[in-house]
Image 1 (spheres, helix red, strand yellow):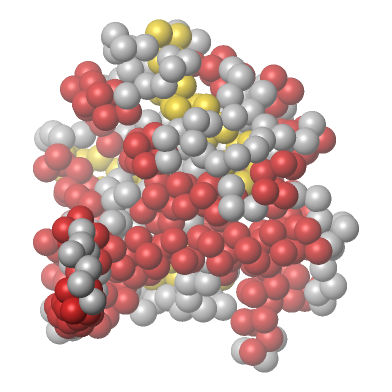
Image 2: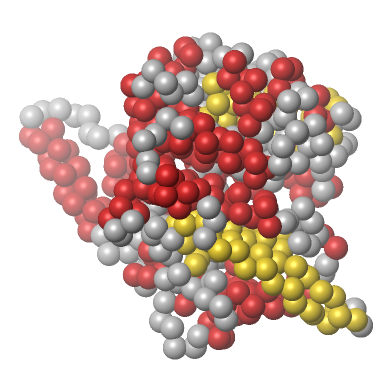
Length: 476
């Protein structure tokens, strides 16, 4: 977190929670039950590497078990600590409730710089970490289901899934112990792109409501909107790529760890991605102007700002200088509580992280369901769907010929219409529906209550009420 932030990430989350809870009429005991983290497990384990034993510290926090299993990623970073993990676990509880995935909230982390270790060493470390969690049921298909987060990906999830299977050889649902796996290890189409795709769907839904768009002092659609993306990892790349190629938005700046690149006419995201993969950063990219002081680029004129890296990048030290009228939080907690208050006072519309980056957990839910059902989506109905569409297309063409109409259905239309939905199309459809529905619940609260001034408070209200309802049905 930035040193310009005056409170910790956990305190920031607590403060935002308090703003919402003060507008609710919950019994004090239930309020406290929702607020606190149920449990946090700290593990310190040794792994023999490079001729000596190295000790690593990891965490797995369970915030709420109002629904089970609990869900949340595992991140690898030197900044990982108990407070951060518990705050992220709380966000996961509310995120899952908001987008109606049937999970409680959890989070894990390992205090490690993955770049400092070779692949086989990382595998040893990951398997040992997984072993420590699995034997305590902190990784389990029906109790606690991790996923990738900062510093981890498909590779690490495959190692964890394999470790669980080695320790539970008769568990038929073993693959469901973790999501975000590679396709060949029980993963699902569309999981890698999910969080970035969710950002796109969230923005599309926002721009379907002219009243909301006008509150951000914008108009029209995403077409031509100038966007700055901070963080060019998995989430930032996919969000930028989809928005520029599919919605004709202009990505005018990309901020990375080694600087930023700026082009008012729009950056070619695919070219930049190839460059970053080859060189490890944006420095030296010749198709855009390089800016050494990356943080200053956050303050450039634009229509939409997408912070997609780590928490606390927008803080009281720079919030007054942010010119974007619309911010969508692709990262967890990129805006601190005090910065949020400054931006709200200035009229900036913020689409909160709890909603905006929920694409990952939503598609993780689909993967979990796929693993439990032991069949890929679309396998049973896709060809039957295509055959039914073919019958209709053939009949329309027959009737047109019988009526003396020479024209037939165009080949491009016929091809698109006949194609049955495969797994990727079904995953994207489910994600789109989830993001639309969640936004509509948020905006209804936002616009129907005079005491709710922003989408973040609305999101917390919707989520907390759903968690409270779950606890009530349990008899609390």
